Length: 272
Image (cartoon, rainbow, N blue to C red):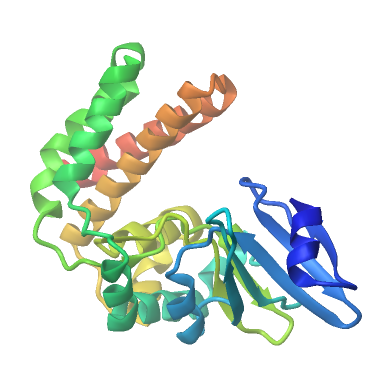
């Protein structure tokens, strides 16, 4: 793959893997020029670049084998640290994404359809049944019961473009202090609480949820918290399935602990 990319770029370019789970990302350097290359990025990338949400898209090339190579500006910076997720810049960036009609229209044009909570519930139920996980772990059975009880409050919500994998590793802080949200492979049209609920639960002290949401542009209420924990349960169950399928039992145990924590909060603070 590296040699092939060198041929695409031309003489004088050095190409090295840039890491990542997929192995499809590369750094290309030539004298003082640097590019971030990725194979088969979403066509959504062009709009994200135009909106200033990801680093600038330089060019896109479709290869004879059907692969698409994108080249983005390489920026000096680092991943955001967990404690830095409390920055109001993160809330403002998320609000910009969720409010963007351009992003929503583009995602719909490339075939994405809104994902409803009912569809999510049926999907995770099917996966758990297929793997026989609910019978093995009481916490999973409890979580499924809570999902069913809380499902009505998740219906008929505004649906926007969501990143779908909001963690500090996916936010780039440049040396100039600008934030970019990268890795859009899980982008969806759904309830925005999927994104900001993840940030609140895993990065923001509960005593500061009101302040963070105010910066985002909304107020916290009981219904929001219920929706937030509903989607957190779905996310935790998804990873229990994902790690189970890969026989990563240490990771399964870790996710089950997260599930226990979520179940406990729902029992004592939501389903009173």
